[in-house]
Image (cartoon, rainbow, N blue to C red; front, top):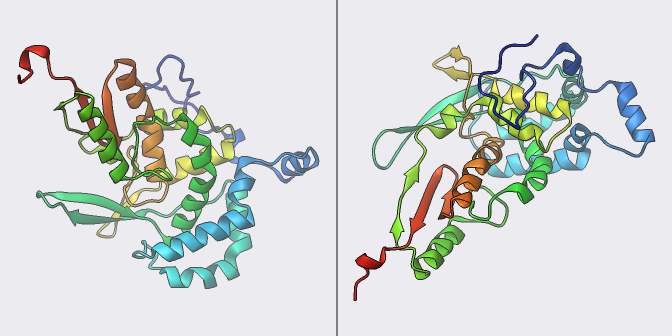
Length: 278
């Protein structure tokens, strides 16, 4: 099936963005065996490698957090995996794995209002973390040096230091930008198109899209997710940086000095000569 793509742009071939039946099968056993004989390994198999999954499990267990819609806690994750690991991996490999909806949680903001968070199930968190561990090194070289949020070996303190450097260079006028409802309004088709620029394994693309479309559970009612990447998922920070990299490059192409931390950005400019204080 195909549907008209209204969000595609030049240089961004999205191919209709709805996976065809030929893609849904992910990779067949024969294809995987052929790759193994050739000394190659699919990206999905790197995600599902035992060491990568073990590291993802430990990360989710260490972070703790609330249960998702199925009520499973992080302490119940290991017994479940011991019993259902083979079934779980098979469903991911054959493209039949279906992430569960995220549980919607409202977190009060200090300045009023609420922040909408999505809590995936612990198993979905583990799989998302396994994806992040493989995809992060692929996308890191493509990110802007002005991006500091949710990246390895980068922090808010480093963003503040960079802003201070710009100030000392004479860029003393600041515009503080916050993309309103950013995580709730990300266009899925454009995002998948951007992911495809670096990821060629359609099984991984399909898995990412399933997480994006898993839906949201609010007061027992399921709502579809046609846009957005729910805050709270392990995969959302990486996807947000992928989506905003073009924004970073646009600012850089216009000569702006700025720092960005997730959806918060602070472009700076020099004070005009007529405004200089003697």
